[in-house]
Length: 311
Image 1 (cartoon, rainbow, N blue to C red):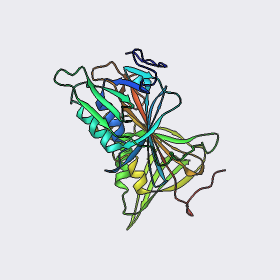
Image 2: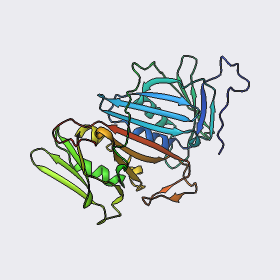
Image 3: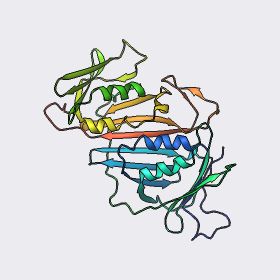
Image 4: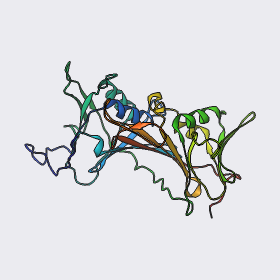
């Protein structure tokens, strides 16, 4: 695998050279990563390009933001010629649907991504396909607004966080559903545990004791009790669209509560080709070095009498 960053592309005038030309040899991994942040049918996204890779950003109601980080190491080729960091908007659903056309189940389909096209499109083209060459053009736009600054800071010297298998986290959040309700997340050091509590026509509480089941709660950090409430629909969006194929890999999802109750949930999605050598990660799943897409969700808490103030 090779990856390069250049200040221009040979054989093309500087004015005509695209900002980015890159190739990915596992389209399905990219589809899985982007699908994880697609929580509604019609959803706009912002793409930011840089010499370090591609970042996709989606937001909802000023209370929920998700980012997908596609590092340049994920690509077999990554030729970057732009000055600064170009940003453009597009339809997330359209991007996922177009990428799906290039994906063949059980095969490592390759795709070339180029930006911009003659009319500022995002251009996709199949690479080394034995059957046919597929092209796709996606119209882009100037983002209406810049992405909100979800500035995350740890709420003390010791990060308040825990790591749990992704499938278990999704199952727990699904079980807590109450129409229009909020979910309380509580971390306590003694006994070390995480408690999810939903209230509606009744109460439902799910507790993860740290020492009682280390296979369930993989890691835990907490030096004081903290509790915040979050809108269920925003909390559910952090896990509801993670593909089942990703959940079966048994990776760990890390949940961190920051200053002011800002919630950060991190997932890992493999973008490696089938058959590549892999190793076992901390959660017991297989992953390939440098072939992991990082996904982050940020959820703002509700402000009510249950909120614990930071020191």
